[in-house]
Every structure is written in C-alpha cells, then in structure tokens.
Amino acid sequence: MEILTLLAFDKYASYVWFSYGLTFVTIALLFLRTKSIHRDAIKQLRSKYLRNL
Amino acid sequence: MWKWIQAFASPKNFYQTSAKIIPWFLYPFIGLTLVGLYWSLIVSPADYQQGDSVRIMYVHVPAAWMSLFIYIVMAIAGAIGLIWQIKLANIVAKVSAPIGAAFTFLALVTGAVWGKPMWGTWWVWDARLTSELILLFLYLAYISLNNAFDNPKTASKASSVLAIVGLVNIPIIYYSVEWWNSLHQGSSIGVNKVSMQIDMFISLLLISFAFKFLYGALVLMRARDEILIREQNSTWVKTLIMKGEK
Image 1 (cartoon, each protein chain N blue to C red):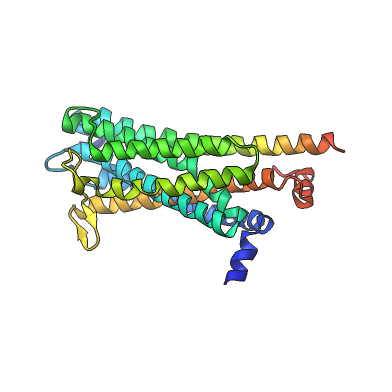
Image 2 (image 1 turned 180 degrees about the vertical axis):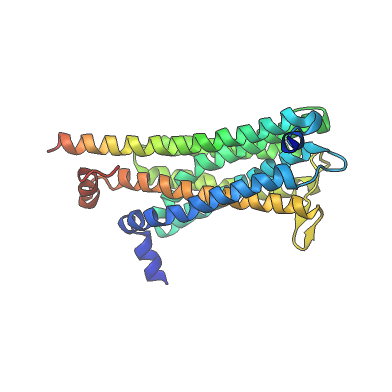
C-alpha cells in the first residue's frame, strides 16, 4: 500500500507512467523485430537451399 | 592483436563467437534495468522544483545519450568499413541504425512529455530539440539509403559517407545549450562535475548502462542475421541452415 502511494507521483503520474510505458514498448518492439528478422532470414535461406537441391 | 581482430571479424568466427557473448549482454541488461527501475521510481527523491516529473529524466537522458553514442559507433564503423573494407564493420553500422533511431525517437517523445508540465508546451523550435530531431532524420536517411541499393557493398559505401558527414550534428546537439539561448536546461553532468543528488545520479547511471547492454545484445543478434544473408553462398551457412539452425 505504501509503495502504491509512492508510485502515485502526485499530479505528474500520467506523464511519468507514459514515459516508462513508452520505453518498455520501444524495447519490446526492438526485441520482437529482431526475432522476426531472424525468423525471416532462416525461412528465406532454407527455401532458397531447398529450391536449389 | 591485429591478427586476433581479423580472425574475430571474419563472418564465420563472429557468428560462432557472438552466440556465446549475447547472454553476457542480456543478463546485465535485465539486472541493471530492474535495479534501475527500483532506484528511479522508489529510492530517488522528487526534485524540489520539478517534483516527481523529474523521474522522466531517468529514461529521457539515457535515451538521448544512446542516440548520440550509437550514431558515433555507426559513423566510426562505417569509416572502418570504408577504409579497411572490413565487412563486419559495415554490418555493425547497418544494424545499429534502427536501434539508434528508436532511442532518438524515445528521447524526443519523453522530452516532449517532460516539457509539457515543465515548460507548458510539448515542443519548441529550440536548438537542442531541433538538432535532436535532425539526428532522427539522419538515422532515417541512413536506413533509406542503405535499403536503396541491391548491392550491399555500394549500400554500405553510400550510407557510410552519409553517417560520417552527419557526425557534424553530434557536437551541435551536445553544445547547443551553451552556444544558443535555450529553453532546454544545461548539462548537469560533465567532467569532474555532477550537480545533482547522488540517488538521482545512480538512477541515471543504472539505466544508461542497462541501455548500453541492450544495444550490445541487439547489435550482436541482428549482426548474426545480416551475416547469414550476406554469406548465403558460403558452404558454412548452407550447412548451418540445412542442419536446422533456429
């Protein structure tokens, strides 16, 4: 309960939480994009090699 | 030393070694982020003038630092690729650009969100803000230019020149608050100078080191995929993929 009061951040709560939320979303998107680039690269190469077998 | 660098910089060796290095970046990133969040949201005090809005600084400032740091890395890597024709340097430059653009976007938006309650406006055409916006455009121009060519060598050459020319914007961003009258506050941290409360400084350091480790992990992960694409005609890549690399 005390922590929740601490994290209320007075009248600036929306600004603070939006900034931290956006940071979280940006980092999550960077990781997801990295994963999808990896998946696409493997898929693209595998189909190329199978075509040329 | 030069021989070791050359050996490590060969795509095959880098691909194999980097897999072992990635966790050394990922785990410190997670640890530093958790401690950094605790320090910045709970331990660190509210500012006597700005109140709790000062907590935005702990994501805004490290993101802005990263936007400059990644651009410098990108330009240096591009220059190394241009001069010594080291493939890995070109790859590091290429994969750094979207990460740098993301941090620049983050710095600009969190800056606007901090500016609203403090300055009463989301945006002003101030030297610091404008030069940081130009940095975002430089990143986007670099990415577009790199994607505009089919030949990776030509793409690397053209975009490296752009990155090197764009370096001129870095001192402009850094010194803009000294050179021009600016609404943006001056630097609180410099050589032998820290004009802020110690817990605030620790929060800044924790998050900025977390971001550095995050950047290291993402560059390694993305560079590995770029290597696979560029070396797709090599036997080792074919063997790796057909053996079931996931």
